[in-house]
Image (tube, rainbow, N blue to C red; front, side, top):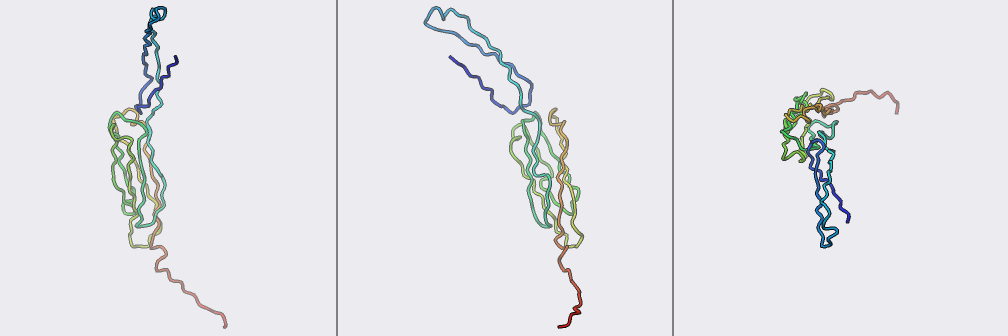
Length: 173
């Protein structure tokens, strides 16, 4: 008889694990019943690693327009993983929330980050800003990851408003 062993992905970051499988032999046939049980050692290799997905990482939006980014972890952390979101241009962009926390219990639940271009009612041209995602954690794997940046360009809504064009017609009709 053929036995197939399939490893389940538990999403834990760990090293190779060793398991012992015992095949117990029992039969009404005395020739087979006298055979010894067999022990099989199985090594399960880990395919999980610390990573997070932040999408998208670039936005172009108008003043008074709202867009959404999402973030989620790739694997189960051993401790909380906290993303503090620093807004480099708080007069041009608002962000909510300013902090996202993942735990060993909610690590695979995608989180939304709302980004809004702020209307400033002045003609000041388009602006560029960044949201910086700083990671804080006691998890040995996630603490090694680099911080991430979302680049944002906010288009000035007043740029072309009240634009007057003066010209003289010199044609003869």
